[in-house]
Length: 151
Image (cartoon, rainbow, N blue to C red; front, side, top):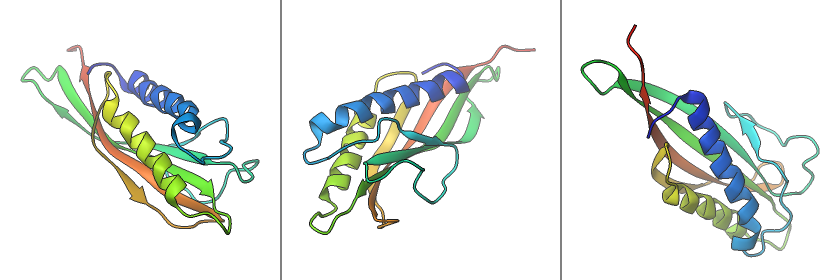
């Protein structure tokens, strides 16, 4: 669990991008995925342009705190919250089980991740119907260590 903000953010996004590409083979009835995850630093409403009725996700990484974990103040533990908002177009005959299965698949990937970033307490969180899309989120706390040189 070491690195810096950029490398650990990249690790999270790379892991999520890989999981997103594996999702259609692992979640039955998923339908057509948008090729890319939509990345944001804060939450906002609305469907990105060009999305149509494809399944898509919005990733939000929010760092919250950084605490010194050594007397020398060279080792720091950085903590934050990761939210992956999953959206599936909701037609008249479907239920919300597909979007819940997609969020649960992402939660499983967070639980299984081995790397510099440690995900803790990942869980799916049901969302609302928004702009015709059913929503379910994969939410997790995360932490990673940073080693700083003294001045």
